[in-house]
Image (cartoon, rainbow, N blue to C red; front, side, top):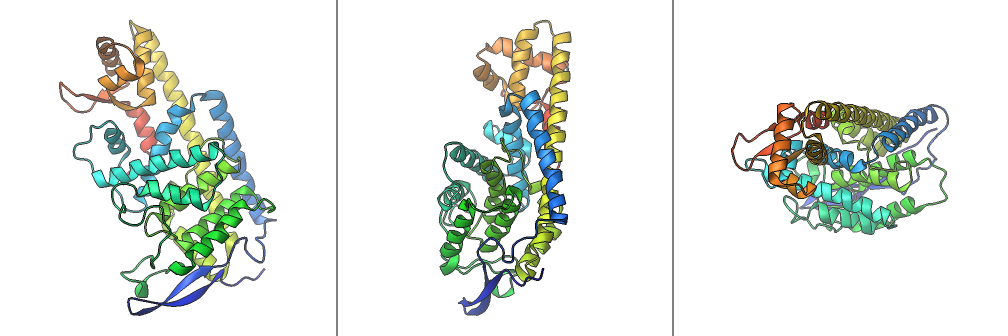
Length: 387
């Protein structure tokens, strides 16, 4: 099936330069994406793994907040690292504890904003709000509410030309949709999101939507982060995911060159099938990674709980401190007191026991304002975020 470019170029003048800005054709692609054959076979493995992940978490990890708390934060860090931020999971956890001297504050604020965006978007969907341009603008507004980019029209579609790569539009690698056509293109994009009559599988729709959003690039800043987040929101909205546990930032980070090449190939040649094969493999690998992480954390929690029960004199109070460390794997004694309601002396004794059992460790070296980390838990979540 022969296709040509998936849009047209509009000639504009920006800063005295003549440029060609790309305007994508509305989705779905024409001719339609060929689902049968190779692409159909590529659809089955990610759906199987997603089903396994869903089952594991439902049966063995009933308190999803423990896992989601750190997993969402890992995604936020990975998504920002694609855009050259340098924060680590430890930086973010310290920042949220208000114990962050010396961390890259601008970077960690951006990561913190991303966490807030994830929570807001998912809560909106749970409340029955539609996945719309209004919600996309809300998400962007929160994303750029503090720190770098806060002066770049948070929550508003752009009114000036942007570009990707190069120092100016004239030497850019790619020039997205002209600003006067952004609203119309995003209107078509919203119509595709709301199309209830399509027979395209949800994973395919998510893959198509990601390319379209990145091609329009409707904001002055933060498009990549919003575009990656939309994948998760689309799959949650479609019921493919019951919990927000699929984030492709690590896959895109590890395959950055292929990712950008395939986006460009879709635009120039209409080769949606090759892009979708890459995208679906990313879903499979990412779901496998989440499944492996969940299993390892379940094993870790079981082993460490057994150690506490076997070796602690006052196991019940120590277990309460341990459960607080599971919920917040980098924390302080006052924070544990507040979350558990137990006294400071009891908390201190429980933390001392966990330290002696080498489950947690103190990381400040101070006698006051000490901070403790659940080291093996954080190490598992840190995998892939090392810069």
